Amino acid sequence: MRRIGAMLAGGLLALTLAGCGGGEGTSSVGTLAESAQSSLEDAESELEVMTVEETVEHFKQLSPQVLGLEGQRVSEYDVYNQQASVPVDGIPCLELTVYDKNATDTNTPLGTYLYARDGTALYELDVETDTLTRLELA
Image (cartoon, rainbow, N blue to C red; front, side):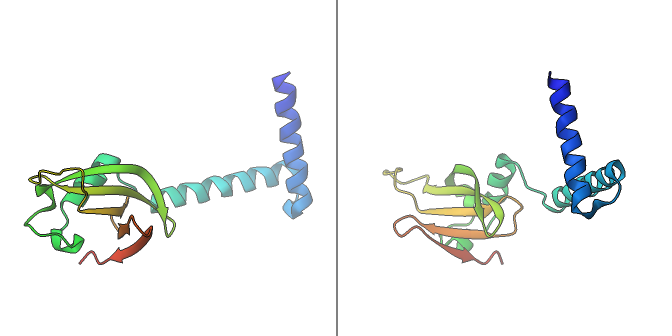
């Protein structure tokens, strides 16, 4: 039964594509499918996202001054990821919250940031107003 359903779906796809000006049935399906696969592979190769762990480590290499923090290194602070994929301007970003390691009240964040998973953009999130400010990665 599944085989018949798959054959019918394939046939309907071929007819639909042929009706869209794709030319001769199966050859247009093959060409269109190959083109779609090629476009998908191109898009994946252009967008090289880091893993969550790599993104956190990359974020810790930033200058604290870029984040509006004092200190010599971001690694002097506690950094926790909140969400793995928050899209901003079409780029998947990691939401990171920074806390002071030495503070007695460690439940108060010093800042919340969205850092592009490809390392190309950084935003500061104002949690009270739910607004983003793009920061320069200089």
